[in-house]
Every structure is written in C-alpha cells, then in structure tokens.
Length: 318
Image (cartoon, rainbow, N blue to C red):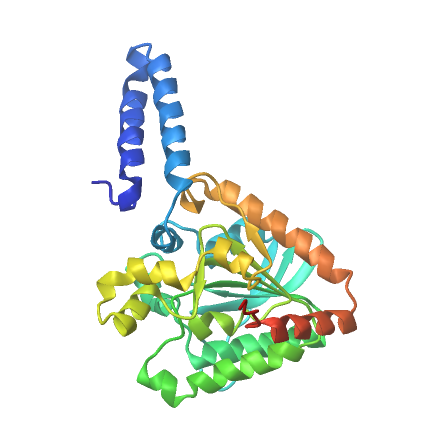
C-alpha cells in the first residue's frame, strides 16, 4: 500500500507504480506504446474516481499530507512578503502567519493559518490551531490594513481554534468574537480562501469576508466530521456518515450561498500538480483584488451587511 495515496486512490497508485517501473527501463527497450497506454488508463481512472467522490473522501483530500499549505503559497505566488509578528500583548502565535504582501501590481495585508509538515514544523505551528494571541495578531494587522487602505487576503486552513486550558484562560472565545465584530464593519475589502480545512470559529475568525473563495476539494464546517460523529453517534469512527450530513464541501456551500466562488483543482487534487494549483489560486486572487479595488467603501459595507444578514434565511414549503 502506497502511503502517499489515500484509500480510494490506491488503484491509481498501482497504475502509476507500473508507469514508474517502465520509466526505469525505457532506455533499454522500446516501450513507449505501453507507457502511453498506461498513462491514458491512469488519467481515465483518475477522472472516474474523482467524478464521484463522497463528502468524506473530499474531507480526506482537504487534509492530505502533501496538500499545499499557506507558506507554500506565499513562496510560490507572492512577489514580496514581509512577515509581521506578535499581538503586542502576550506573544507571537506561529499558527497564524501575517504580514504585508505584494502580487503583481497589488499590495495587501495577508493572514494565513499554517499547519506544518514535519513533526518539528507541526509543533512550531501547533498543527494550525490558533491561540487567542494569534487572532489578536490578526486583528492588529487588519486594523493596520484599514488605516492604510489596503485590502485583506486570508488563507483558511485549520481544524479549529486551539482548545487548550491556557487558550481559554487568555480569552479564546472573546478573541474570536472580537474579530467577527470588527471584521463586520472594517472599512477595507476582505477576501478569504479556504485552501484546505476550514474548522469552526477558528476558521471564521479570519473568514468574515466580502468574497469567500474555496478550493474544490476543501471543506468548511462548524465542526469536524469526527467531532460531529462523537457527539451525535458517540462514535468518531462514523465520521463518514457525519460528513455527508454536514454538507461541508464546496459544491454544497456554494449551493447554499455560504461561499461565493469555487477554485477548481488539478485532476487528482492539489497535491498531484502543485504548480497548476498555484496558477489557479493566483488567477482567482488577482481577479478578486481588481474587483474590490473598483468598489467604493460605502457599497462594500452595504453588500457585506446584506450578505451577513442573509445567512441562515430559508423558505418553508407547506
């Protein structure tokens, strides 16, 4: 079993293993036809599998260990980035990356949650779980963006806010609530992108946006499938069932008008073609930055309030 592939990707892994084996001997034999046939078969199989993914399988893709993280995107698509640290009160939370960025002709204040890939990085970034000081750092930078009339771009990728005792003692819920309160009236454009996993208030605290984008195989929910299953079924192994009921994938959220746009992913997911994923994200961000730059502040706030007040409305058919 190839551990770089998820369970439902194993048939693809077997085919690609055969392709790799042929690559190793192609110099000593003419096997180009066999390789072309296998590549076509692999592409066809990938399209078939990814055309009917369940919500639980998409949840697994959103957490794929080789999926790009915030720092990967910063390095790939930003022309300049100056990181700013600290909440000016307690400490600098490395789960929240923030600073001033430039991409093409656009300058903006950037915020993003970082999970970390190696064990050392995961511990440094606390697995992407932000503490109160991280949210207060984010608010400090958002206020700076408002002062200097810079748009805000945030990347969401967290299982949720850190639930530790220390975080609660330092006012975790207040920090999240304060961010939501301030972002609702912030006089500068806000663009958010769910790049992987958007979990609960930990994600929403930097995601109250004028435009909410979401990668195709990302998830955004009030609770994780495992957490939901533990509460409803008293059994976290029933996460696959919970995922279907949570409607946490991009297609569901777009239909319910909880997000605005879906960014397509390369065939097989971001981890299969990181370069293409970066191109798609950059193109989407440039388009949104251009759009918000042309919008007057009064109209921006009016549309933001209208959008927020419209969440949760529904019609009953008798």
